[in-house]
Structures are given as structure tokens and as C-alpha cells.
Image 1 (spheres, rainbow, N blue to C red):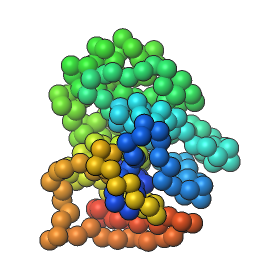
Image 2: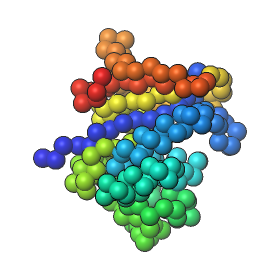
Image 3: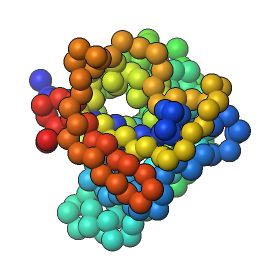
Length: 229
């Protein structure tokens, strides 16, 4: 059996745990120095995964931004940027989204069974659409990624993806960046949704590192023994 990829979750949140506000405009939580750190983390991964909601809300490219880091990847025989992975329940993705129109990388869409036909009709020429069950089975997704050579997976959101990976115990490491302000709006999305998590008052997650990066704080948690302390 192929071992699942190493899974690293990355998220930035406000002091009160929100990853966005409710204005409809993107909320900037991080800073330039931390964005450069994230770019370095991306460059060290084989694939970047987000949920369909993140694509609809933020329209990310999910590419390595630094030319030097892209060149270093190519010099090592890798693609300039990691593969880009999307998980969707209904297959309702816009083929004009930047993740599908920018960069020459492998694109994979793991879709719940009822939405596979729609996803293939809309995106079959832009990405490989994989039937991931109903509902989407993350264990199967990780197994398929491992079979495709993905050894290190970066999960960048959103709340649904973070919740599912954490609640199922499939995350090895968490990078949580805390921005120095409050959102204070219950309509806004939080870092995670309600769920039953392996870490609680009786079983605390292990802090592997705490670092100040400009005006934000990075806390790195080791969630399994696969994570270097």
C-alpha cells in the first residue's frame, strides 16, 4: 500500500479566528514577509489543495511566485510550480478561474460522484476530473495523489477543507498565522467549522515552533509523529 502524502495545512486568521470578513472583498490577514514564507513552503511541496469555495471566493492562482524558486524546482527536474488540486461536491467550477487558466502545471479535480459529469463537461479540457465518491472521501483522494507521485501536499483552505482534514486526523502539520486584529462578525468564515477533532482539552496538539514575522505570529503545530519537532 502506498503511504499517503505528508499533509501540511496553512491558514491565516484574525485574533478571533476568522479567515475573512463578510464584505465580499478579500481580507488581507498576512504581510509581505509571511507571504514570502508561504511561497517558500509552496515551492517545497508537490501539490497545493483548496476547496471549490476558495476558488469561487478568492480566485487564487496557487503558483510559486518567486522566479528563483521556480528555477530551482526546474533545476531539480520538477515542474516550476506544484500540481493544483481542487475538491468539489457539485462540480460547479468556473473554467475562467485563474487556477485553470494560468500556469502550466498538473490540475486535478476530485469531485463527488453526482457532480462528475458536470465537472468533466465544464473543465475536462483544463483538468483531470476524478470521481471521489459520495461524499468525497479524503482517504481515497490522498491515496490517488500518492499513486500520482505526490509526496508532500499543502492544503490552503478554506474552512471546510481545514475542518475535514483536521477532524479526520489526516493532517500532519499546521501552520497557523495570527493577524493582529479582530473581525468581530459572526457572518464571516472561521478557520474551522464545528466538528469533532482529535485534539481537545484532554489531548493537546504539540507546538513545534512559534515565530514573529513582522506584525503577525506563526504557530507551527506537529499533529502526527511524521512532523519534525
